[in-house]
Each structure stands twice: as C-alpha cells, then as structure tokens.
Image (cartoon, rainbow, N blue to C red; front, side):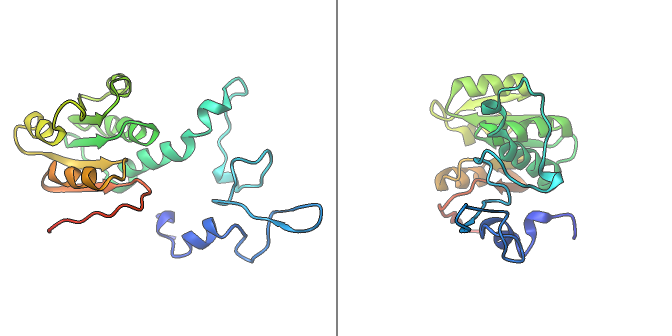
Length: 199
C-alpha cells in the first residue's frame, strides 16, 4: 500500500506457497490434484494465469530464449537504482557483477546521471558490454584489487553507492570498503552467504 510491494509482510506467502491467497490453485491435473505455481506465475509452463501488471508484451519475432530470463534481472537491477538507492545526479556508483541485474543497474545509473559508473566483473566480454551501456570505468577483479582501483578512480574517496549482485561474502564486504563516508550498499543477490562486519 505504500508503493513498496517487495516489503509486503505477506510477500513470501503470496509468492512462495504456490497457491492463491484463499488457498485455491489456478490449475489442476486431470485427476483433480493441485498444480502449484511459483512467484504467482510459474514461468517455465507453457500456459499460466498472471495478473495483468505482470505481463510484458513483446514482438513475436523476438527469441523468447533471449528475453525470458531478463524479466526478474532487469526489474531487480533498475529497481534497486531507481527505487532503492535513488542516486542524485553527479553521485558515484560501483556495480559488482555485470550480468542481467548489474547491466540493468548500470543503465539506470546512467539515466539518473551518475558521474562515475564503475563496473566490476571477472569477464572481459561483460566489461566491454558494460562500456557500451554507459560504464565510465571497468575493472576486471581477477587482474587487480577492485577496491583499490575504485579509490584511485574517486581520488581516494570511494563511491557513494555500491551494488553487489554476486552474493559472495568477501565481495559484499569489499563493496562496503569501496564506499565513501556516508555511502550506501545494496546487496541484492539472493544468497545463503552471510555478511559480517564491524560497524
């Protein structure tokens, strides 16, 4: 009701229980047994029922194998920037991981007018694409200490925002270390890893 549906106290029940709020299911097998769904959609099915706001119409000529996986990633990455961090024009950001989520965050940061958009990854091909999408700087963390490089790029200050899409404990910790005073970290990977630090 406040415009933050992912903070809903019933989010897990509505998205993970596999049934409607009243306990019913959208589909049943021929023998009448229930077919449960996931995330209120079950996107690996050939047919499903979804809410109208969960549908995106695309051109029939587009290969679904290329666009299907992008839905969650693009909404997560861009939503983190637009709705979560909401950077002001001229602020700086480092994005760790440049897959679908990181690329969406990068494009959103470009739209928001971030002065430094630093992308970190271990794949040169992804970093090349990040440059095409608007990254001002790229760092291959296999070749150099990315936190040191971020501090070098920002004249020793660090960045105003970091986004971690890896969910790796050590990298999430590094993302904190890369922040400027008063900076904000968005650890957005779904992970079972822990993040420990001394505040």
